[in-house]
Amino acid sequence: MQPSGLIENLFVFVLASFLGLELIKGVSRLLHTPLMSLTNAIASIAIVGSLLVTGRPHENQLITVLGAVAIACSTINAVGGFLITERILKMFKKRGG
Image 1 (cartoon, rainbow, N blue to C red):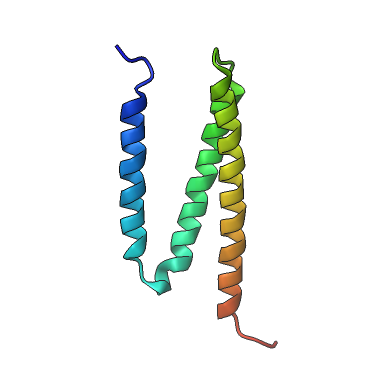
Image 2: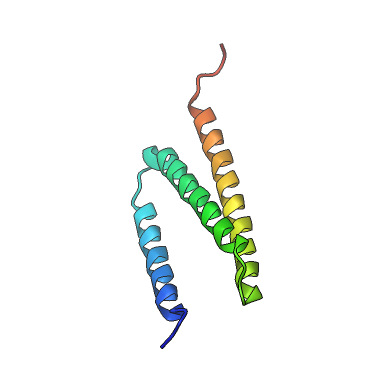
């Protein structure tokens, strides 16, 4: 019996990646800002999940290292997404007073 289910988790990850790519390709440009806000929220949830995984003691040090990498990547994704969303919203504001 496989305790970790690595193959199953990898399959779900690849399937979710392809599904996400197909969904994002079909979004019109008018909906880009709300979509970015949603992906920022998902990245924030990923930060919380990776903090929970990394904070627990593990027998294998690799889990802790991968959790730290997940924290860094999710944080960069969330912060970058919020900066891009803010920049896009500034383009739609009226210039002047």
